[in-house]
Length: 181
Image (tube, rainbow, N blue to C red; front, side, top):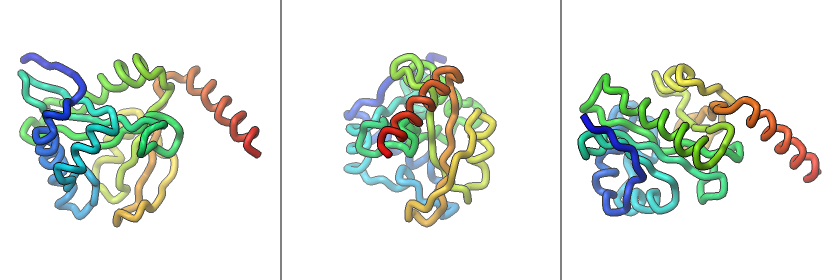
């Protein structure tokens, strides 16, 4: 089987939307309101145009996707780091680990390899029955919770990808905060 990783193109918006709706269907059934679960075509296209959206293609078929929201973009994460947004694998392929594969690829090739970022963040619903545990197993650490007005409490998590670069980044962040005081 041929696996290819690449940025999702705007002309793939309908395929991308169908993947996200399928990937998030079980979460939507739990009553958790993630934007990707019900985004219409216009919102999905705006999402593609505003963020880095990457797909994993198995023999040419989009089987998983992950979004990176940039600190300088229209919807930054809470820490001034790249932030994982819409992320899902098609439920028709259980056990293939397509979600893990695209996450690993994104971290190595895009976040470290291109952006040179020391860490990445994401947010998930604390009421989801298994996402927090999955992210903990994948190296994310809980940071804080907040109510974004979506009907659930969001847990923000961070994964350090380069310890020494992260320490230097934290030092710079503290110095910048001190200069603002």
